[in-house]
Length: 493
Image (cartoon, rainbow, N blue to C red; front, top):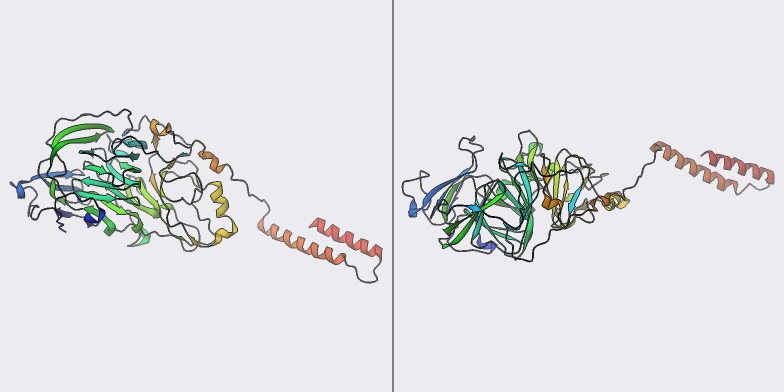
């Protein structure tokens, strides 16, 4: 599909255009005829453009996994001054977790505060936890971002991996070399390794979550017995159409490599790509279009049925990281404890809340906050949720709150925590107390013995009532003997 988007700066969602589909071989041009025909790298490109390839995999990767795109730009990205280290007051990004810390404790953070000072997306990005290292191209990192201003004449290129961005508060207007995306809370976007992008804040302030994978790229999970349809449909993923600006300016390119930030100056905007084609491009997805599946009889399947995107590991059936959501849906299983069950898992689980109330935590887990349960750390519903879910009225079939949306980054690699996360002022050090009220409901008597005891008690009560009203003409001694027999029977019961 060829989409022609005039040069300019669209800022409203309805003014942006997208190509539909996941992992497609696509093409887009902002000027007619800007794409070369019949070859990738002609001696002279249309409009005097430069041809530049962006490779997301090795040249020799199998065709099914090979990802690359050709960009046709006004000036090539190599035209910049040397990079220099960019040091912030605090080192908040991590891409090597060999010296980070682990803990078996359940962890929870209250909502992360948005700074009052001017802080853009890059300076407001900080690492919570992760595993592996970007140098080995194996593992992942989980970040939060809080921002109060947009990125002015600056962009970020992440050489360490792919970013999956989950806005929680405030929409993002993301300009990339491929075009522009408007990503609001309830949507996600993926910007892959090496792509330059800039983040503006249409709502003035923003907060959200980022999952970064160092090795492979995200893909749709296999459906298996689910069949051909369900979960996230490929047609609902949207890639921006070509958009460019031919602007001379003092521009800063920030480059992230092994968690370190470098900056280079150049005299023009990097968003000068007039046309592109390939299968390596950023994309967005509206989580409201996810089609959940679930049980319609009893019990409920594992949360893997809510996987939107996955980054598989080398071990079949496991993932470096899964992105899983818990959307509004009907819960129709009978005789079933409906919240998530108590659990210890070889996978580690980082939870976030975009809006509403999560059905396993009645209190304390808030939008903009997070929780982490590492490998084999027990977790599950808090006391209030358990008591409510086991009450007689909980048997009624119902719908989860429609304005609730939680998600999980689930990973086979054990997360290691950064000092920034462990020492965060909003960490909930009383999180463990939400389970202290869980009391024993244990009754050792078998169910059949309980029923017999209830029946015997009912019979004894009836006999006692009959004895209290003796037949006419009965002697006082006979009444006493009868009452004594009844009392003995009741005692045996």
